[in-house]
Image (cartoon, rainbow, N blue to C red; front, side):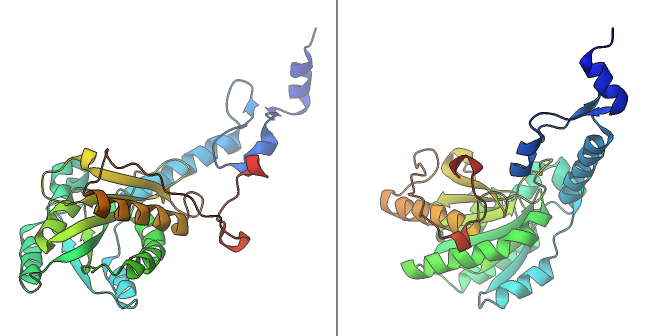
Length: 275
């Protein structure tokens, strides 16, 4: 005898998943359906497309000059630097080279610092990381929100430093050279199959070369479909204030910021569980 499932497949080879309607509420790969014991052709092609997007995001070069001009248009000073990783292949194969500046950039930064001996309260570094796409899409609007917050605190801001082939720890060398009390680095996170453009933010108090990740605080998944710019800036401001008060950052500093209630116009994405 033919089972009901086999009879259904005779008319329609692809079997829908009963959770199909939930796919409208999340980018997660759920309710993909099946054809026999395999994924449907559409689901397989979608997966291959997402994988290609993630690979492209890793290898995409950051357009430094256009980004620098956009930052300068905001009235902010900008310095363009380069890590010790000469190219993308070196960056991916030698993570240690991405954690320090090359000789020319280090000398340029030292010359700038010599003309500003008093240092700064905060340094902001923007690096390509593992997704230049994330930086090109989200770094500038996030920077605008962060600038609004720090202006209210009357903190002195170092020039925005743009770093090609940079990793998180390179911010420590930059901030130490500039004599910055705190440093924030914005960089592209490792792409996922549903988020090739996710931006990460790392904050360190009293930065110096040689610190490890236990000394930093991280805010991740900053993008339109994840954590919106206003909330990311709000959480960062909490960390900055608490770090100044307690003189520390990292595992000893927890993110306990109260999330503000946003009006409908500023909500990036609603949680369907709370509807």
